[in-house]
Image (cartoon, rainbow, N blue to C red; front, side):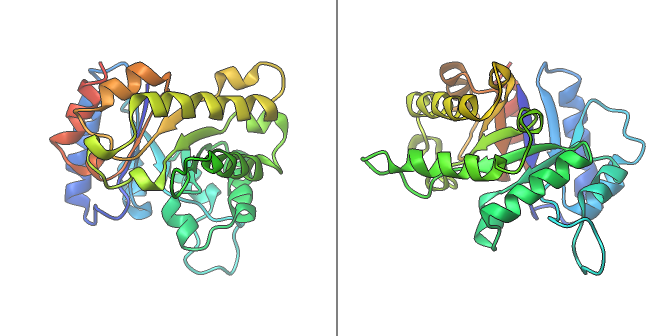
Length: 247
């Protein structure tokens, strides 16, 4: 299992960041899962210096540019230089802030050019009874991978995060059966976009109201490869429970 902890902007000081990193390092020594943490950019640089633990680091987002006179932009190369090996791309919050399909495709390309493994976030706003949400997710994946070579497409991890499931309790979030169907559908879309049988090696993650009470059922029933966890990942009690309940 691949578990990605997206700290978002919940962590704003180095002391808290170090405590959470220590929690992740202890977990990484006791679980078979691969742990990746995505701190805010300045904290990532501070934590990843001389990192010898089993925990990997991810950018929460990257620039679609290659650098230059662009105040505030953080490029893929900058993240790779300080120790990131993954990059979250196309998160719903970034899409809401203006990331278009074209920008997301460029960000994937930039990440891959600097050997960052991209985690492409996709997901519908609402689940209608006619299945239009399936076409929506297909279009997000297809547009994002459009400018990549077949070999590059095979390196992209897809994280399914339906917006309607974010911020809910486990009781009101997606069920194991619905998630299983969606994972199969995403794998079908990837099979159409990737050469030969390479799509069988593509990882599919899930994010959205994942709690200690539902993570085991979601994992056992859906053939999911891991989870992208937001707010719960900065809780030093809840996050270890999530990881341990996958064991």
